[in-house]
Amino acid sequence: MSVEIRFGTDGWRGIIADDFTYESVRVATQGIAQYLTTRSKPSAIVGYDTRFASDLFAREVAQVLAANGVKVLVINAPAPTQVSTYAILDRKASGGLVITASHNPYYFSGLKYKPEYAGSASPEVTNRLEEEIQRVQRGGRVRQVRFDDAQREGLIEVFDPQPAYAAQLNRLIDLNAIKAAGLRILHEPMYGASQGYVRALLNGGKTTVEEIHAERNPGFGGMHPEPIAHYMPEAMARMKAGGFDLCIANDGDADRVGIIDEKGGFINQLQVMALLMMYLVEKRGQKGDVVRSLTSTSMVDKLGERFGVKVHELKVGFKYIGPKMAETDAMLGGEESGGFAFRGHIPERDGILSGISFADMIVKYGQPSTLGTTSISSGRSTRPAAASSTHGWKRSRPARLAVAGSCGPVPTMDSSTTWRMAAGCWFASAGPSR
Image 1: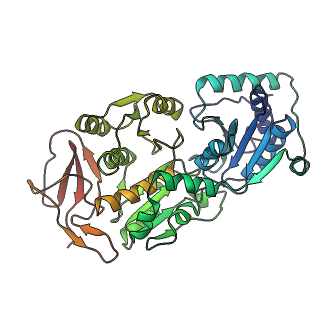
Image 2: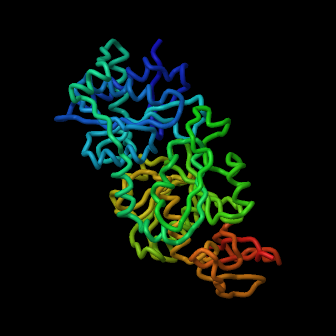
Image 3: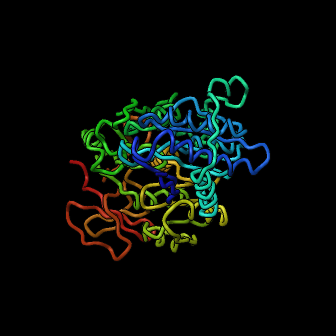
């Protein structure tokens, strides 16, 4: 009986050794190869994450593609999905295939297909892929060649995608300013594909990056690799204990981000999008539209009204958000799950760029608590007074970033809560440190 292979909002996923097997991956790849070979001189990036046998599944993908006459460029180590995806543009490939199940539990794996524009495949493309795969399942032939033989013949090339990705991020954001700021960053890759990436990007200055859960563990150490508060107890505890200015957390394939503030408060993904938008407009001087999913935050709409930015609401999934960003040259796109995309980059989620942008936000605003334009404490409006910190940038009180948000009337005040207004939205923070 054939396995049903369907591409949902972001690729095909299955349970390892049940429906996601070497055989089913070969069948799916053969269908994709038939789609790719409709164009002249086809080539494809093949990437993979840290899950069980991801590297072996990637070899199977490469062998089938090469046997069909597709030039294959295989990454040399587990890498974030967006790193493999950016390589499509950098190497001018016809598309990319990534073995990953993103934020899903350890017993899942999956296959994502990224077209030549380095974004999520459109419904038109996934329909074509499914048609070709079904043709294979009805009796088509799966072609294969040995990996080593194909490598010798030049059909398969193994390469390092990290330098090109690092150069791209350095064009998008001032990494040197972050390196020089003396921030203390905790990075939580959740045993996933972002291991080493944030540290490598920010290494070489006063800023330090400490990692936890930064080794390959196909079972994710019993964790669910999704960067939300109750799946990150150790990171939350480390931040509450003090000693760090920011925690950047990424899911299994690092296309999503989670943020924990310097007091151990989790900033939910809806608030993160609003803060990123405010930062891009106020501190980066960017103009243009914003695209969000229909289940994301109304805070973005309020900010849009304040800044004169048009906000587009679309169905869930970057296969809808990405094309709209390209159509409108939007500065930011996002969804409620913590996936954000930025102008000038791939039209796809990038959890590493999102996290580093948050670090740049802290540097640009001068302190983690001063992300709004007004501080309201005990019913009075005041500007927060900055106090020099011991490591180069300014810190002020209250020292905690948004733990709640509202875009309605000013919330009820009490002596332990400070509410800050940011372009029409109220952000709550803990009272001053004693």
